[in-house]
Image 1: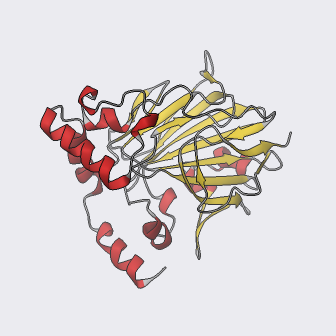
Image 2: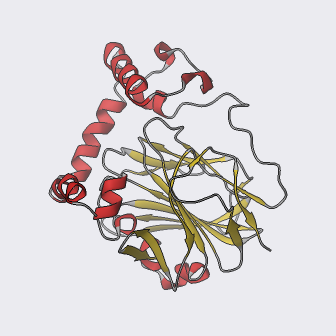
Length: 286
C-alpha cells in the first residue's frame, strides 16, 4: 500500500455507502431520455466501451443507463471454450489474484488476506470444502460486459446473502482495505459440479445498486443486518457451463472457489491478466 492508495481510500471509511448506492440506483434506472443518453455517451467515451459487440447498438433503444450497462452481447461475441474439462471465465474483466487457498486464507494483496469462512458468511461448515482449494478474484471495470456466467455446469445447492459495507473494489482500495472482499456486501452461490463443490461470490461495491441471479431475481437490495440463506433441495436450478447465472447493476468483482485437488488454473492465468467470458482459465483435475 502506498500513501496515494491510503489517501484515496481513507474517505471511504466515513462515506454512507448504502445511501450513495441507493441514489446511484435512482440515477441509473432513470428513463428520462436526455439524461440516460448523456450518461451512456459519457461512459462509452470515457472508458472505451466496445459497442460493436452489443446485441443492441443504438443507445436510444436502451430504456435506462442500467439497461445499457447490463446489455446483452451478440451470440458469437464470446465463444465458449470447447476443451474437455475446461473451466470457463465467468466474466469479462481483469484477474486481481488467482492461486491456492492456504489453510483457509485467500490472498488479497501484499500483506492482506481474509478467511474463506468470513467470505462465505461465517459458517465453518460452508467453508470446509474449500479450505485448501484454489481461488480467483476477477474485477469487472465499467467498460466490461456485466453479466456473469457459469465456469462449469452445476446444480445449485445454496445461496447466501451476506451484509456488509460497500467499499470500492478498485486496485488502490484492494491494496488498502484489510479483508475487503469479506467486508463488502455479497451474494454467495454454492454449486455441485464435476469438480465437486464450487462457490461463486458476487461482491458488491460502492455505487453497485443491486446484485441479481437468474433463479431468484434481485437479491440485493434490500440492505440487511444479518445473513440470509436459501436452500435448494427439490427442483434445484441446474445451469450449464457458459449459461448466465447473474449480473451486477453497476460493476464489481466475482470470486470463484474450488476444493482441494479439484481444479487448477492455466499457467498464464495470473494477476492483471485480462480475460473474456467463456475462455478457458483452468481445468478440472477429477
